Length: 429
Image (cartoon, rainbow, N blue to C red; front, side, top):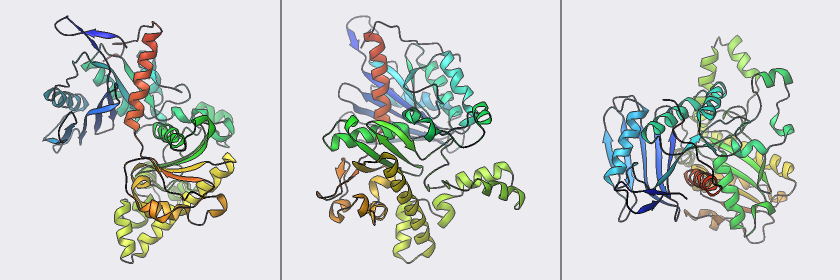
């Protein structure tokens, strides 16, 4: 990695830090990592940007007990949010003007078919990300805002886009295509792209490591179960099928999204209920899933209600688990041989009842959960299946920020090792 002069112009400093930014429509999540040991130096969140009740939470992780600092009050826009985050980092001696900062890595939700790997951001790249806004209207605009704002803060640094869709671009055409008119599909970029790709890439690789084998040697089903949820079938390290499609709405039952649904439901709601396209969009994305079924999208609260005999909560849980079973069975058929089924993300990592229920009754597929192992709470990758199980069942905590940092740092390092000039300062403001 290229060394950078200090402000005094004396001893050179090894640039081995990466700032990871995840810009949402009204929030910015950030992490600063030291790639020497892949440790976190600080984490933070700016939320409710543009509101009077904006809040910044910042936690330095450099020595001693981590103590979160909080700022409240209006933060007008993403530029102000990143400036505030930079001030908090500077207060810890981790300022963004540090010569130790090698690059800024951005989570970009949609990369279409063009972006199949992490990419240094240039004007041309940003233009293509903007062209994808129609297929990611809720996400790509916020990602673009974060990129422009970060470039303004450090125009001398490489900005790298790591795409949620990239891991899934290895899907064969027969898995990625919808069975609609080809010309119409191509004209409007309608196909299955998949999302949560950084998580599926990280977790499938970690699962192989847990099994003591190379990723190229194993077939894995990954269940990323958070408020958003998706499944993937990963054969020899490559995604061959995933549950989300053109948008993150397809697939599993989620916190507020319906997942798979008959497309004609939308026509029915428009014709019979008189709902507008926007109203149907809100219904399926924000008022469906678990919250639509029982009024809660927190699995802990749903389980509490089930324990108290709440029938709506119990039905919501059963529908959620039934969809998981369908995908496990389908992906077992797609892969032919399964070495592991892996649970990850908030629900997947923390809800033993979900894991137990999803695997129950799948003994003929070689899947069994050990009740004792399943009940253990841990932040480490672990097996929850008994030794005799033909297919391993595992819990692997995801780390999308570390995956983004790894890909960003590797890309910048590879370019410099090859003697290539890494583009910087090319994004118009």
